[in-house]
Image (cartoon, rainbow, N blue to C red; front, side):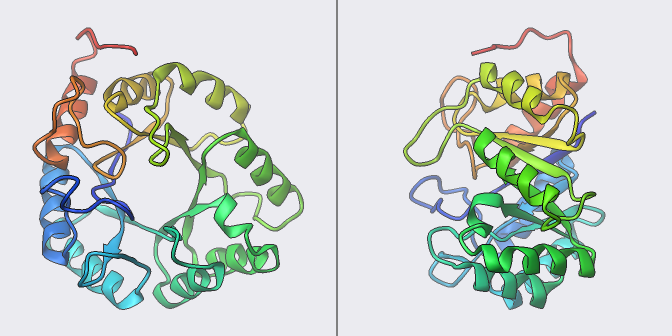
Length: 256
């Protein structure tokens, strides 16, 4: 079974997008527990301020992490350093330094907005023992990651990547056919890879990724729908559907 990480909210989704988007600490905690029961072993964590806006506030992160650790024990927690169109690289670095998280996702293209701080960012992550997952939106990002590793900006052993299929804005649905070329471009140099997919094709993409040996990131950050395009009840429904399909590989699944 691949590792299933739930990404329950993201930086931009709001209640207007779906009433079950978890924004408060209690909502995120309840979602984490429900998704753990449904089959997720990790959570990709975004926190939001009192107005529901994406934030990198270390205090809110600490409160939320503490609640998840209490109510969804043994669930791995990965924070995001996503800029979300709000934060610059110094703010992302400050979040990393103040929080000292066990794991964090980092967009290569975002960090390279300040090349002078990139080495400092990755060195800080290495020093505090943060497991970095590099977010790659395309092979240009992958090539940039190669250059950063080759130059010593990123440590040689920091090779955990997230392959993003489709887009939030402008909206573009992921397709399962996009996965194989992206994985092939890794050339076996990044054996620890995870996939997330925007849109209702998420389910088909996840099953293909599992067959190819990847881990899966599933959740309302990327997709609010069932495979037929109707709204899912909540994050746990989509986690359970994929977990069930992985346990029953003989079931015929769509391959858009």
